[in-house]
Amino acid sequence: MPNPLPQISSTAWEHPADRAALNTLRAIPGFDEVMRQVATFLTERRVRQIFLANAVQVSPVQRPRLDALLTDVLTTLDWPRRPELYVTQSPRVNAYAIGFDNPFIVMTSAALELLESDDERRFLLAHELGHIMSDHMTYRTIAMVLVTVGSLALLPVGIALLPFQLALLEWHRKSEFSSDRAALLAIQDRAVAGTTFMRLAGGRDCGDITSVDAFMTQAATYESGGDTWDKILKVFNTAFREHPFNTVRAAELERWRTSGVYDAIVAGAYTRRGEQNQALGDDISDAARYYSDKANAGMSSVGDAFDRAKSAFTDAFRGRD
Image 1 (cartoon, helix red, strand yellow):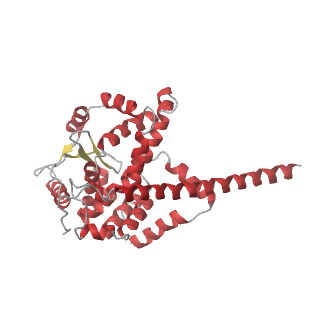
Image 2 (spheres, rainbow, N blue to C red):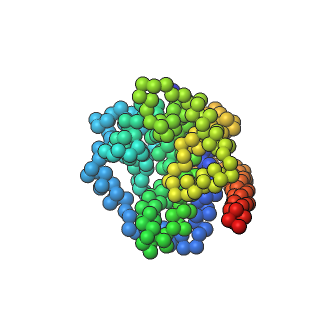
Image 3 (cartoon, one colour):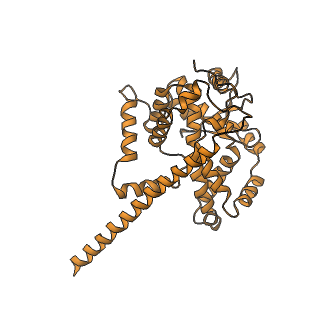
């Protein structure tokens, strides 16, 4: 059984880029006004009624095994406010927390079918609880609306919301890194985390042999391999995604696990709820380094790509002459 983490604060696991991206988001001119407008349109009661009407609410008598998994997660992370849990019929593998004052968790039937073990399902539940404990819910719930509206790119409202959509998605992806850490702390099993990401990326093994180690090697190849153009394509491929790619999530979580912070938290050295976060300055520095490294790599890639493009055009026109 995982070591319980009494009174653990979400600041113990939050990714520094999560906070940096959220602060950047709040600094966008007009952002708060957009948030207020969307919040007045979307009410938590309205959303909850949809799931009450057309999903199965989990309880000790309705899917009691899944209910018990949620209890395990709440116990390990010592969270007293039990969120409602719903299972909805959907072919899409997904789970999410939604709401404002009293957020609740939704898992799709496809996610339950994909994840073969209780530990993998526990990991997914803990990930969503991590979002709730980190107080991500207002922005994540509104992000769901803006992403949907923003996808109507041909409409004027879609074009107007595009900067907000891109900024929200950038933060949304970084918040996933934070909640992945919460999920690992809840199950305290590296292999389960790796298997869960591998299932989300490639499905069930269907009687064949699968390897978490091989998947982690693949993750390292994606992050460090490829030429300059591959790196630029990674940026374009990610820009409109709500979640980072599963290989990226696996690699990011493994880096944190081996950094020493994870072991210290499991051993009991972590910020408790109500305590001042003494490491805030370090978090800001870490976030600055994180984005600086990404920006430097991106600018280097773009500059190299322009040089290659210039050479290609020069060669093409020289050939025509």
